[in-house]
Image (cartoon, rainbow, N blue to C red; front, top):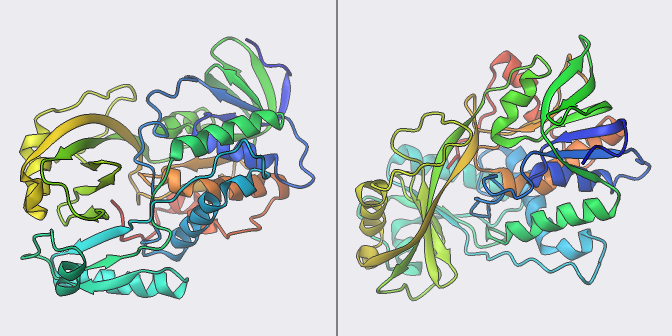
Length: 397
């Protein structure tokens, strides 16, 4: 199938959660009537980060920009149907607010949690710092011999059905006139300051006013087509679903062990995950799993933290990829200062799904109006990448 037109106002490279969020939000911008083309290389999305995500959302960040972005994400999830125009066919989304529980095992880590709690509380988040005794009172199943304290938030923090949110971004974008094309962007024709044309694997070419790089782990490849560089690479992340012979008597918050392994309730089962011990960049299509990691790393950590999990049965597992920002593990959003019509929405390093409502809206505002109108997203600008100045965020999983 060829593009319907030979020229578009916006060409979006990648049609997963960010390509579809930006596309849908553009259709919500008052006065914007431009043609939008989304080019997606794999419409099954089988290995997209969107499909392999754990669909969690938190306000427990240390940076105010990240907190505000996720607060809007929670608002969007709670009022999903209203945001989608009140269409009765649009399902309601439920945010399972079991919260995140960050466990600290050193005085320095505990102080970081206390400092972050103050920042979160200043923005209205419900996070509280808990001593080990308070944790034990609320969640007596933890082994806490090495734990000094934790942060926890039971308000608008937990997990949700990210797949449904993505599906309706895509559906409603199409309903509102966005064109989706199964093809692959392979090259761009550029002047010193602008992208003028996009070339597709099929041989087709289209002119464009704006290009949006929403290509996930391939974000660096897309940027290089415009002679730009961003520090994005794919890295493996493991997810496990397991059953417990002795289930807990209450919901398990998304618990971040000091080791970096996390675990939470997942319906009638439990979910756990984290990075491998060695965490190099991998090929875009390399989803091979090291099956020894379950018994060598994850299960011992899980059973140590929750002794009731010494008898568990592995139900399922998969490997997904983070679009890992090697500079600071945070999003890169907005235009390049020299290539002004090339827009980034890349490098989420595991935060992507929860941030997609706010960052999709913000980038759509930037394209339609030349400015951010709802939230100031300038802290995520690519300028920091060019200068090597990191976006400081202590709460990275």
